[in-house]
Image (cartoon, rainbow over all chains, first blue to last red; front, side):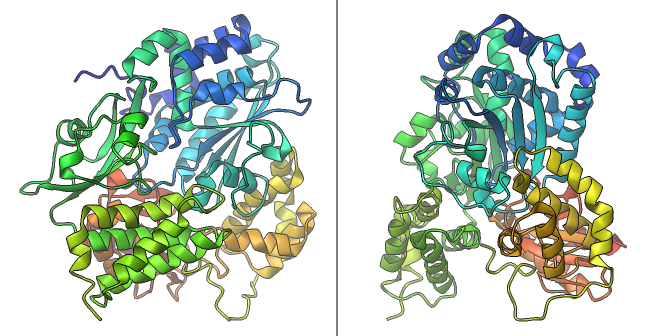
Length: 417
Length: 177
């Protein structure tokens, strides 16, 4: 199918890191219009009507999230950008920050104005050193030119943006762990409710949005909610940056309509499988998503269709595996990741990820017991729905789904009495 | 929790005593730390940025550094220690002049990360999680770095290298001075 691209059209240049080039191409005009000629309620209505979903992984309607900020709370409000891109298989936000940093700033400006925030933080993962530098420079340039600061673009609206570099922890991509980290604590998720919209950063009302979500906002205001919503699928507005990696000919970021199928992404966008190989399995939304077999790739890639297919759209990280892949080894790798990254707060996850990793290690080494599949399923299911954050579900999902889709490979390795 | 992470692991070795005078060096960093603290509406929010600056400056975070940072922020040393030990980018022993992190997570693993890790380790004569005795390179096998399109890949200081073969990785690591 044809895809009308906009998010990714600058990915082949670094020219637009510069404020001058960005403005020359019409940059910040939409933000100016928003903060001088629109009310916050009008902006939120447009974003709601666009069906923009949270593109970090949860897919929560963005406009609705903004509308949860209480109107009568006297505390300052904050916008926090989740740029802690850490879900294995995901690398799109890095492209946006490196190639179009001012687009993110413009989206932040509109969102901050809509929720009444005058301070916004970008929480970027510690390993993204160059992207963080690029953002720092872009913000400094915007501030020096009066785009940001006490009178944004000559208006009465004030906004300051601060870049905060993390220090290496997958869990900090979970929004409440991110807030803890930003407050100078270890990144352990908070119980919800209360939700961050009511009690967030420094106990103040806070909206946390993903980089890509915010980059969509200027386009929505410029071209209209109807345009954006029609680009995508029902209730899933717009395009999405899909990250393809693994055994395909051309790994990379592909901007496609939410209506794109997994088959098209793999065979048309990413050039298909490597020479002489066939598709075996694919994880459609980051390592936390349930795995699909080669027969299940005709699903559409929007949040609701993938949910119906028994998996999730997640972060848009599509990991493709060909017929050379050992599924026990792949699961072993996933469980190594989860057992390393569990924050240790809830016992089902802290202990369960470790147990699951040990059991899969035993299978991989040819020492699997007859009841090990049952043990692995038990440890995995015991993590799901029993923990403070969604990490437990994420860590339990691979074990359950790999065994369900590829039972023989596991049975073959569990023969010891 | 980085339980099996080389640098952050709580092995029963005595804490490193740095050759530099920590208090003196930190005194020189203090104006920059004040600038950082001014960006946040709560002082403790400056903790991680200040620890990042210390990691860059000292090459590690020792108990002595935790103490000066605690005093600067105005919180207990325990709280600083808790944060320091939670995040993988902080090392308890001085890192080498270069930091090489080879990704070992799924997309990289599917395309041969194990062979890259083995070759880099051989070429440096170092295990993942250690620093070469000459202080040239700290070598780690780490979880996803967010660059799966470059798989198999590694981070060398501030930039990413990939797609790698064991040979390419060796070539890059050998050139580090």
